[in-house]
Amino acid sequence: MLTMMPSPSKRTGVGVTYVRMPLPLSTKTLVWFAMNEAGKKTNNGKIIRQWRDELGREWFEAENERYHMTGYVMTRGFDAWINYCGYRMQEPMEPMEIQLGNRSLDTVLPLSVMGRTQIQSATAN
Image (cartoon, rainbow, N blue to C red; front, side):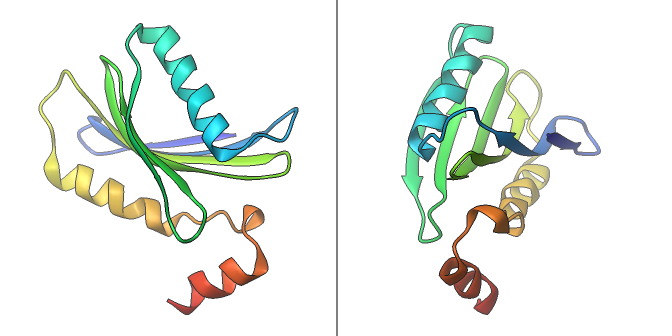
């Protein structure tokens, strides 16, 4: 399931993706796989940086010749969520849209892949 919400300018977008995997994969493996697939489509996909936050989300910043993306991956067993914000590289940037899109990533928290302690911690903040 993929939901993509474009901005008013259609230069920036936020995506929320749920994936039911055939095998349980780690978040790092899923980030690598997603970037490998993106690279096949544009011949130059690359991960700029990658980090993990206190909620267990594996964050990434990546780009190819068409898009720049920031997002995170969470997995639990056969379930995975890939949530991201991105903008088109070949068009003028809309800084306010990018800022709002990046902030919106913190509002999409897939509770089905979080443990009970993480849910309680996230809702207490």
